[in-house]
Length: 147
Image (cartoon, rainbow, N blue to C red; front, side, top):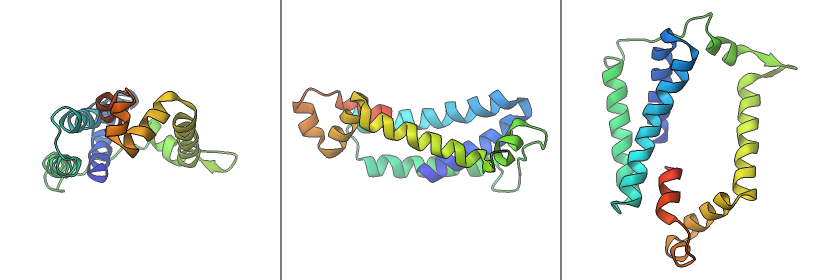
């Protein structure tokens, strides 16, 4: 489901870029975050199988994507003078912004997982939800946050 939700987020960002950079950031974050929240709630609170929930969200996101683009007939282009163009094509010391952003996110994710109690809780819940529950960890909240 991640690929379909990412694709939906990309199309929403391109569509919302006509209203500015912040709209192009906010709209996909809200929509894709809502999809993740629904996934997390269904898995953690309704005890539904993660495979079934994420498969359903894959199909829903792909359906929204097809409906939003009129089954591929409509193309949304980001304006050439937008901040997204600079974000995708700019560079610092010969390194493209996408590379630098990816490295920063990988570093932040590694620090989050290795150096915070949330990261340790995440490893515990991923290893065994039952054992994490017996340790008193917030299993449902962790699953909702991760999805």
